[in-house]
Structures are given as structure tokens and as C-alpha cells.
Image 1 (tube, rainbow, N blue to C red):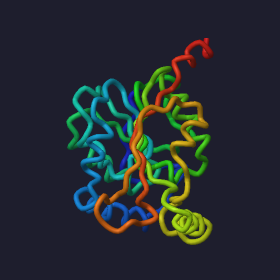
Image 2: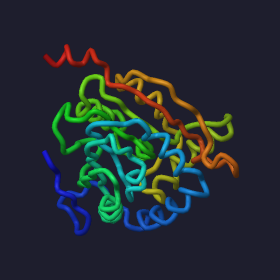
Image 3: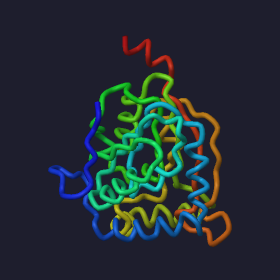
Image 4: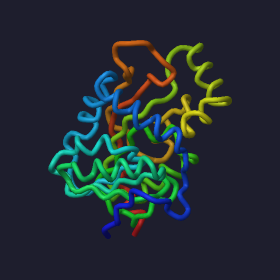
Length: 232
């Protein structure tokens, strides 16, 4: 089921088109790799993965350099065409096979139960339909398949949560490619039927100003093995 890497040009039905945000994100994210400590977090996020992996919302492909060689293939889904172009370039430098393809998290263009693991990295904040996106992740994972997640969301005291929610209702999604600050990624995974493994709450950057985007969770979840019996 190889997907053809698609980087340049507009794909019919591109579900996301944020060219200004994509340009800004491409620059800011590279800086955050070192100054914000994200490169080290990506390494921890992906350590020990193996088999076929699907990455949802691959952005400009900054995870690709951190996949261990035990991964046989990465299918990277990215809906924004400018970021997808950059992801294709990053895929060419990766040490594991990476196939970049267009698609939305709510309707993944892959077969059911085709992957051993799924990677969610700073993407659940911006999907349009969170429950539907996670249902798709559950569909494409084999029973017992693993989810690795590094997501930001609601955190801090009452004043910070109030600020996050106020920004979500006003300007933040408009200027940040549909991002939401006050979502609860761990709660959403639990509600979608995943079995939660260990996860950590952390601040990004670890040493620096605490921003509405700083409250992150890094952890693991699984599609229940019992799903295999239900699908028979």
C-alpha cells in the first residue's frame, strides 16, 4: 500500500490551507528545536518504536530525523501543502523510509489496522474534529497498537486556563492555523477508547517564560487488544 509522496502543488481537496501560518511555523519550529528543547523531546517521543508507523500532521517533518532504525516505514500525513513540501525534503534526509502524503486527520487515506504505531506530535490542538480524528487513529492501528503523543493543552492555574479559553474563543485559532490552547489531549485519548500508559506533564520551554502554549504532555497509549475480538 505505498502512498506516493506529494510535496509541491495544490492537491485537489486540500483540507487545510494556511500559507502565512505555515511559513511562520516552519521558521519558529526550527528555532524551538534547540532553544525550546523540542529536539530532545522528539527523541524521547519516538525512542523504541518499531514496525510500520503513521504520523498524523507531520508538519515540516522535524520528527523524521528521530525515528529509530527499527521502524520499517513511516507514513506521514500532512494536510497543509507548504508544510508538506518541507516534509518531503526532510523525508529524503531521514534514515528510515518516510512516505509523505496529503490527508486530513478526520479521514486518513490508509487501510484499517495497517500500522503498529501512531505518532501524534503537536497536532491534536489544531484538528477540526478531535473525537473523529482519534477514532481514525484507532481505526488504522492494529489491536494492541501503540500511540505516542507529545501535545500541548490546558494547564496552569485558574487565571491561565481562563486566558487559554479566552484566546480560543477569539484570535488564537485565526492567527495560529486553527490551534486551540485549552484542549485536553489525555482526556480526549481516554474518551476515544485508548488505554492510557505512563505520561508526563512538562513545560516547554523548560526554562523560560510560561506561555499559554507551554503546558505539554508526553506519553503513550494503546488501542485495546480487545478490539480484535470485536472486529471479528
